[in-house]
Length: 578
Ligand code: ARG
Image 1 (cartoon, rainbow, N blue to C red):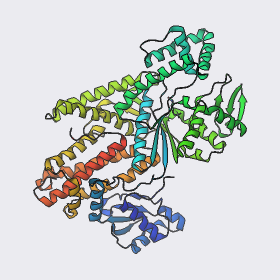
Image 2: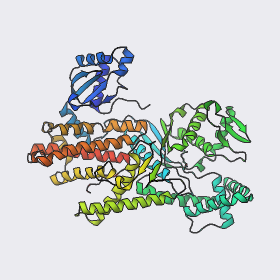
Image 3: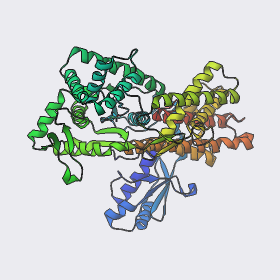
Image 4: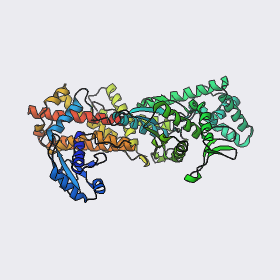
């Protein structure tokens, strides 16, 4: 659905040159980087064209190279086995890069493939009256990155916090409050304690079950005492959650809990029944999914209570009606894979063609200090502790490396870098892999970690500050690309040019780690260039020759802007100094 041409005009030109020479569609032709920069700047394989045209890829590559004529963006093409390797016109690429990254109104991502499309992203979505657990934090970080990535590509994004605020659990907590009183001041901890005590009591006291159901019925029927207490629980929980969201810089477009679908559920159930999709099993209303090798989807229990799945069906319909999504994503731990598979099948059977646009975005576990992070331990406390520890350590490091920073500035930096480190650690590996979280690695300034990226940004910005240049837009228009003759400069420019395509791949596959990995490579390319200056003063960015200095400063500034933009896609700040 997201298939599109490469976003970089240079990469697009390479794909289009192959398409035009062979008479195939340019969409779907992958543009990669040749294994050796000496071969060229972009490589396009002729494999898919070879299937369509029934000809050997190498023969097709030769044909493309033989018929290629240079244009404003590409200067040459050469066949290498099944690949065509293209060279870009350097001056044109530098000019495009500087215009996009340094001038007001420039766009880091050179095209907007998501324009006119809407993506709903359900993320975080914790249950109220329960401490936020680590999987909600990971969902928050991944979902936030996916929201930013889609926004950068021009999508309209609806970030949704689908709070778990409805169900029989709340009947039980209310019943517990009635028995033992409301623990004041009421906190999530107090609610969770009452709930646990109630479950415990229910093991021996059979009246608990009826009591809980009766209280849930009162809640459903709009009994004012029940509703007021439930509202309080919801508000108090949200206030606690908001503390974490604020720390992570997360803002939702829609905070709409399961309770909001109360009135929609009977409509959804009636629809499924009318379409003959439901059956009764042990008194419960279900959709049998045996023919898909799945257990039945439970919609209404024998006692009349609706379930998580019932509310998700109603919510899916609501989102489609309200937003007309092109994609609807759900970011939860992989443990919920079956639930979303069932949801999709039931919606498909109900005749909703849009059900195929629903995607579950699962992720693996995080182990903190060797301990598995479970749902039951108060992991928010853990997160806030880890954040506090991260900030303290960064603060100490920065006090050493940058003693001129005022303590206030240093604390700000420590906050941005501490939280950035935690975000990056959650995004760095493929989603579905389990993550081992070791604070020492996560906080590294020179390893594959968040602080390393942020430090590279601060360094690039400090070069610019020391140069005294304040008008980067002027740099963009005056920079003479001929002064950027080093291979290291060109490799950096090519990497910078790729950000849009990396972001598109990351959004398409819902894998923010693609951008995380890209940013590490980008910083490595910057370091290779920057390091030249330590051997030879004429190779420094701030060298003696005015025209060369201006061109190098433009590249430095383009790097800073691109890195800051890439960090923002991941939900991280880009400090000016560190
Ligand atoms: N509240 C659920 C939990 O804590 C996650 C909800 C995910 N979103 C959804 N629409 N089901 O596990």
